[in-house]
Length: 86
Image 1 (cartoon, rainbow, N blue to C red):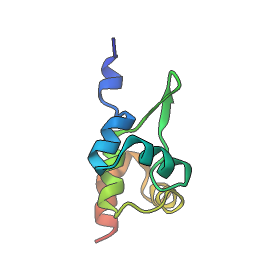
Image 2 (image 1 turned 90 degrees about the vertical axis):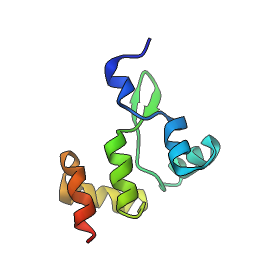
Image 3 (image 1 turned 135 degrees about the vertical axis):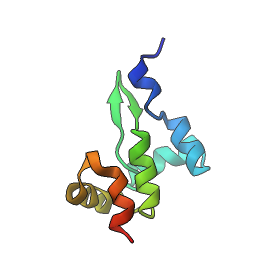
C-alpha cells in the first residue's frame, strides 16, 4: 500500500508519460544529466511534481543548469521559476 506522501510524488512512469518518452529513455536521460535528479524512497526514484512542472516551464534545461536555477530561486519557490525566465 502506498502512503499519502508517495501518492504526491511522480514515479518513473509518470515522468516518462508526461515527457512522452519510454521509461528506458528516461533512465538514459537521468544517467546523462538531462532530467532533474529524483529522490529515492525505498530504493525507488521519485520526483516532486512541482519540480518537474517548473523544470518544463523553464525549458527543460540540463541538470547542471537546473540545479543552479534551483539554488538561485530556492526549491520551495518553484512557482517563481517560470517568472525567472520571463
